[in-house]
Length: 288
Image (cartoon, rainbow, N blue to C red; front, side, top):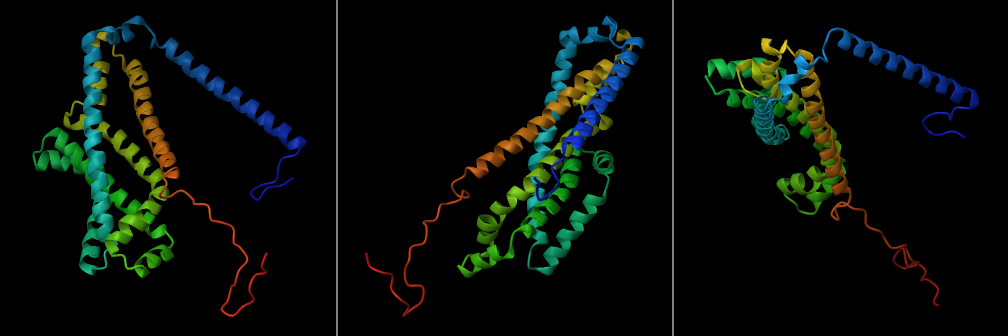
């Protein structure tokens, strides 16, 4: 039995794959054991290094930092999506000047390192740390999203737009009611991936003294009173960042499922064709 993509492995191939899986599992467990051994031998699990997390002040510091991270990400996500939508529309414009200006803006901010933009806004424009962080993330991620939106719109079959124009719809209606809803499915994975990048890049805020989650962890890790608990801080902060990124992925899957069950995009059953006259003057169907 074969498939269109690959040949189904036979008994010997399945046995080899099973051996490869067992060997890979042993290697992974050995690496994990070696890492745990190093952590224990260097005293990373001592009570002195983990005691800071039992204090209410430290817990509040982490919660405040987490809240500031989510606030910066919320602003940056909304503004990046709006920035991307506006300049993607500009790049798809029929007016040459609008298209050139939009292309220049998108290509410039997409090529600029996000950290340089954050520092420039913070130092040269003397903006507040939150404003500088959100502005830098918006300019960079919004430029990337503009390309994602433009590519998603262009990926839709041109016949869809032509059919809408033939029905007398205006360009705005074609874009918002025909092309964009179909392009969202193709764009959604790239949009979520870029939002995850924006979430992780909020950690750059600690370089401009913005009191976000990583900044709070840095304050705890550099405390001599707790024997510099750097590894424990990483082991606390990393799963929270991973959990937030996984939550974004879950949200994307939920939105995709809602779209599939949306009656506007759900497939409609078509009645089976009945015998009848196909051409004028053709033979009539037999009477019952």
